[in-house]
Length: 379
Image (cartoon, rainbow, N blue to C red; front, side, top):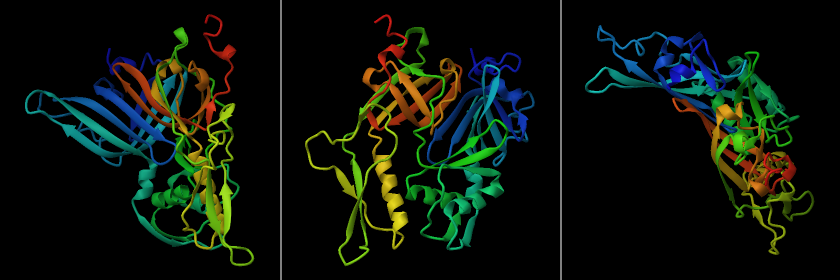
C-alpha cells in the first residue's frame, strides 16, 4: 500500500490529505508523493515537508520538477480529510526545493520545504515609530492586516515598552510575544480565513471529543506515551520594583494563575523546604506594567513541570491534534485527565498517518475518575 491509494480522489478516507499548489490540486502527482510531514508549535512558525518520487520521461525530462507550479514562493495548502469533513491544516509558501538525482537510473526525489505565512512577514525590515499611547494589540492588528490575517486573543489590552520597530513584522511580533511568554501561532479556519492567536495559554478551553487512549483495547489510538516530571522548576518568580515611597527596593512575588489541570499541583510546597522562587533579572526600564507581565509570564511557563511525548495513530484518533489545545488522556493511571498540547508533528506516508506529540501539564495528578476509562469495568 502506498500513499497514492491513501490519496485516491474517488475514495477519500479519514487521515488522507489534499495538497494544493498555486491554488490548484496537485492530484496528478499524488502517486509520486512519498511522505508529508507538518510540524506545529504553540509558539512560532509551522513548517511542512513533502517528498515526491520523480521519474524521468522518455524524452529525458523530469515532469515533476519542470511543472510550472513547483517554484519557491508558490502558495501551498494542505487539507486533511476526516469522514465527510475537509479540514484546513496548513497554508504558506514553498521555501526551498531540494532535488536528489542519482548517478544512474530514472528515479529521483524532490522535497518541498514549506513555511506558513509568517515567512511572508519576514521579507522586509520596517522602520516604524509607533505612537506612544498605542495599545500593543492595536499595533499587532495593524501589522498583520496586510497579510490577510485577523487577531484572535483573550487579552483585553497589551503594554509596549519599546515603541520603535526596526525589524521585519515577523520578528517584531515574535519579540513582543517572547517578552511575556505568550503563545503565537497561525491557524487556517474552515471559512478560508486565517488568524493569528496571540496571548497566554488557553488551559480553560474545553477538550475535544476525541480522547487520547493508551492500553484501551480496540479503543487504543496512542502507541507510546512517556512522561517526565521536572521538579527543578521554581514555584514562583520574584522581581524587583522601584519603591513608591522612600528608597527601599520592593520585592514582588508572582505565582502561576493558570487553571490547574488536575487534583494535585505540581509545585513543591509540600517538600518541607524553603520557598522555591527564582528572581527575574531587571531589564524593563521604568515600565512597571511590562515588568509585571514579564514576570507573570515566566511564572506561568515554569508551572508546566510535567511533559509527555509519544506517538499517536492519527487515523484512529480521528481528528487533528493541534498545539494550543486541550486533550484528555486515558489509560495512564495518575496521569489521566487533561493535558495541553505543546507541539505536534504530523506524518503521512505509505504506513499510515501518525503524530509525534509533546504535551505539558501543571498538575502531578489528573482529574479523570477510573470509571471513565474504557477498561474500568473489566480490570
